[in-house]
Amino acid sequence: MQNSANILIVDDCVEFASSTATLLSSVGHRVATSLSADNCAEQVKSEKFDVIIMDINMYDVDGRELAFDLKSTNDLQNTAIIYASTRRALLNANIVGSEDNYLIKPFTKEQLFGAIDAAMEIGT
Image (cartoon, rainbow, N blue to C red; front, side, top):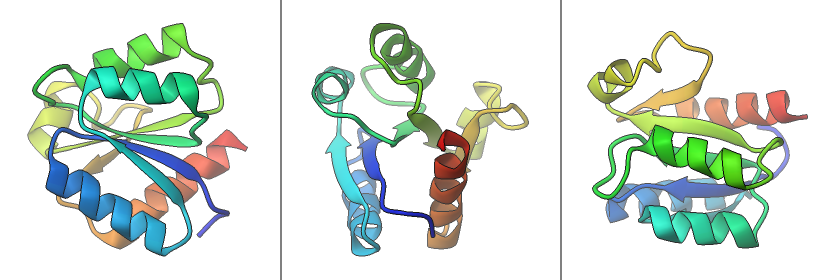
Protein backbone atom coordinates (compact mmCIF):
# COMPACT_ATOMS: atom_id res chain seq x y z
CA MET A 1 0.00 0.00 0.00
CA GLN A 2 1.17 3.52 -0.87
CA ASN A 3 1.28 6.42 1.58
CA SER A 4 -1.80 7.59 3.41
CA ALA A 5 -4.33 9.35 1.20
CA ASN A 6 -7.15 11.79 1.84
CA ILE A 7 -10.17 10.02 0.33
CA LEU A 8 -13.77 11.07 -0.28
CA ILE A 9 -16.38 8.34 -0.74
CA VAL A 10 -19.45 9.55 -2.64
CA ASP A 11 -22.30 7.04 -2.50
CA ASP A 12 -25.98 7.27 -1.56
CA CYS A 13 -25.83 3.89 0.21
CA VAL A 14 -25.00 4.62 3.84
CA GLU A 15 -23.85 1.05 4.52
CA PHE A 16 -21.43 1.03 1.58
CA ALA A 17 -19.98 4.45 2.39
CA SER A 18 -19.61 3.62 6.09
CA SER A 19 -18.07 0.16 5.67
CA THR A 20 -15.66 1.35 2.97
CA ALA A 21 -14.65 4.34 5.09
CA THR A 22 -14.03 2.08 8.09
CA LEU A 23 -11.88 -0.28 6.03
CA LEU A 24 -9.80 2.52 4.51
CA SER A 25 -9.40 4.29 7.85
CA SER A 26 -8.17 1.05 9.44
CA VAL A 27 -5.13 1.08 7.15
CA GLY A 28 -4.27 4.74 7.76
CA HIS A 29 -6.17 6.71 5.14
CA ARG A 30 -8.09 9.86 6.06
CA VAL A 31 -11.65 9.34 4.86
CA ALA A 32 -14.75 11.49 4.48
CA THR A 33 -18.09 10.37 3.14
CA SER A 34 -20.79 12.11 1.16
CA LEU A 35 -24.28 10.75 0.53
CA SER A 36 -25.41 13.39 -1.99
CA ALA A 37 -24.18 15.55 -4.86
CA ASP A 38 -24.71 18.80 -2.95
CA ASN A 39 -22.77 17.59 0.07
CA CYS A 40 -20.00 16.28 -2.18
CA ALA A 41 -19.67 19.64 -3.93
CA GLU A 42 -19.40 21.42 -0.57
CA GLN A 43 -16.73 19.02 0.68
CA VAL A 44 -14.64 19.31 -2.49
CA LYS A 45 -14.71 23.11 -2.23
CA SER A 46 -13.52 23.06 1.37
CA GLU A 47 -11.00 20.21 1.37
CA LYS A 48 -8.35 18.76 -0.93
CA PHE A 49 -8.77 15.05 -1.69
CA ASP A 50 -6.22 12.73 -3.27
CA VAL A 51 -8.86 10.21 -4.35
CA ILE A 52 -12.63 10.34 -4.81
CA ILE A 53 -14.50 7.03 -4.94
CA MET A 54 -17.67 7.88 -6.88
CA ASP A 55 -20.82 5.80 -7.27
CA ILE A 56 -22.32 5.97 -10.77
CA ASN A 57 -26.01 5.51 -9.92
CA MET A 58 -27.02 7.77 -7.08
CA TYR A 59 -30.59 8.83 -6.42
CA ASP A 60 -29.90 12.51 -7.02
CA VAL A 61 -27.26 12.47 -9.77
CA ASP A 62 -25.25 10.45 -12.26
CA GLY A 63 -21.76 10.00 -10.81
CA ARG A 64 -19.98 10.72 -14.09
CA GLU A 65 -21.90 13.99 -14.52
CA LEU A 66 -21.05 14.96 -10.96
CA ALA A 67 -17.37 14.17 -11.53
CA PHE A 68 -17.37 16.25 -14.72
CA ASP A 69 -19.04 19.16 -12.92
CA LEU A 70 -16.58 18.93 -10.03
CA LYS A 71 -13.60 18.90 -12.39
CA SER A 72 -14.89 21.90 -14.32
CA THR A 73 -15.54 24.05 -11.23
CA ASN A 74 -12.76 22.97 -8.85
CA ASP A 75 -9.03 22.37 -8.96
CA LEU A 76 -9.02 18.57 -9.18
CA GLN A 77 -6.02 18.11 -11.47
CA ASN A 78 -4.24 15.99 -8.87
CA THR A 79 -7.34 14.18 -7.64
CA ALA A 80 -7.97 10.66 -8.93
CA ILE A 81 -11.56 9.58 -9.39
CA ILE A 82 -12.42 5.90 -9.06
CA TYR A 83 -15.91 4.97 -10.21
CA ALA A 84 -17.56 2.22 -8.17
CA SER A 85 -20.76 0.52 -9.19
CA THR A 86 -22.25 -2.69 -10.50
CA ARG A 87 -20.82 -4.21 -13.67
CA ARG A 88 -24.03 -3.35 -15.55
CA ALA A 89 -23.93 0.31 -14.49
CA LEU A 90 -20.25 0.61 -15.40
CA LEU A 91 -20.86 -1.03 -18.79
CA ASN A 92 -23.86 1.23 -19.45
CA ALA A 93 -21.70 4.25 -18.64
CA ASN A 94 -18.98 2.96 -21.01
CA ILE A 95 -16.47 2.88 -18.17
CA VAL A 96 -15.40 -0.78 -18.33
CA GLY A 97 -12.63 -0.93 -20.90
CA SER A 98 -12.07 2.83 -20.81
CA GLU A 99 -9.13 4.69 -19.29
CA ASP A 100 -11.22 5.54 -16.22
CA ASN A 101 -10.39 3.88 -12.92
CA TYR A 102 -13.22 1.72 -11.66
CA LEU A 103 -14.23 -0.91 -9.14
CA ILE A 104 -17.04 -3.39 -9.73
CA LYS A 105 -19.28 -3.84 -6.68
CA PRO A 106 -18.99 -5.97 -4.71
CA PHE A 107 -15.21 -5.79 -4.61
CA THR A 108 -12.62 -7.26 -2.28
CA LYS A 109 -10.48 -5.23 0.06
CA GLU A 110 -7.49 -6.22 -2.07
CA GLN A 111 -9.17 -4.76 -5.16
CA LEU A 112 -10.00 -1.59 -3.23
CA PHE A 113 -6.46 -1.19 -1.91
CA GLY A 114 -5.05 -1.92 -5.37
CA ALA A 115 -7.26 0.74 -6.97
CA ILE A 116 -6.22 3.30 -4.35
CA ASP A 117 -2.53 2.44 -4.82
CA ALA A 118 -2.83 2.70 -8.61
CA ALA A 119 -4.65 6.03 -8.35
CA MET A 120 -2.00 7.41 -6.00
CA GLU A 121 0.80 6.22 -8.28
CA ILE A 122 -0.74 7.97 -11.29
CA GLY A 123 -1.28 11.15 -9.29
CA THR A 124 2.34 11.44 -8.21
